[in-house]
Image (cartoon, rainbow, N blue to C red; front, side, top):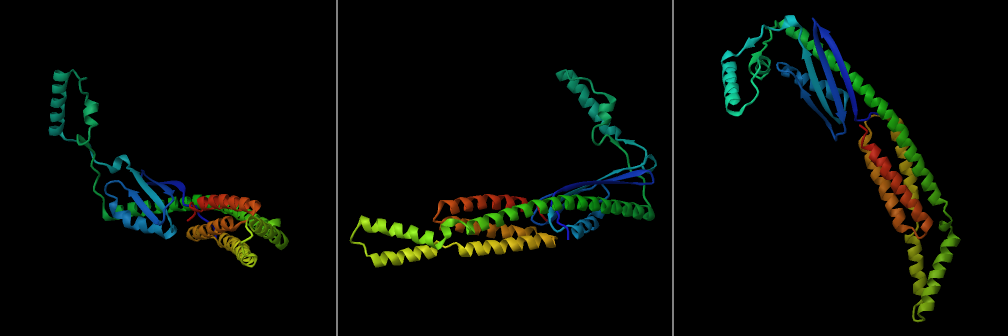
Length: 296
């Protein structure tokens, strides 16, 4: 299955009896699938069907859907002027001109004010309304298809990017595993040196107890479990990317697990080289998680 980003844009238009129907869709990141519509007056009846169409295609993302309809000249009524309102506005404009010296009002300026000039729509028959609704919903399906393609194209780019991050995490994990500081001989030499320094500092210290504590610390500092878990998470990440679909939440959880193991590796490290690897791991994991936020 393909991957989808949660960001994208689409625009689709259609013609019906000389009228133009235009849908514009914008999608950004979101925890769930939330849809906000901007519909022209008289089209509110379509919102529920339109919402279901969006949610049928997408699992996550905040989507804004705007519908614009330009009616053909024959589909609109004759302009109606609210003469009483226009008269009041003209009188107000004259008083402002006389009292404050404002510029005189113009006819086109007054007619452009809301409520002065109205162009009523002609009455539609049930058949005409049904044809219009069908055309609007068909246009929405076209726009949704284009949005889906845009999100999929970005999702595939993210698949390659995330796969690269996982490859880097694996390489750093193997580097930590092979670090010379983890060799038993190196660990014994380092602990023996530390015990010798403590014994030289005070002859009253119990050598047997010191050796027990050293053995305990050596066990605690072992990063074998962290390395094994990192390898397991790498395999899980690759499997999720290969499967595709709506895997954003799963990959986000996996990023948290990567981060946890990287932190533990740094805290348990008793060598500067392993600590440096752990810090580099944390940086890559942060990049991985940031990109995962864009996936559906």
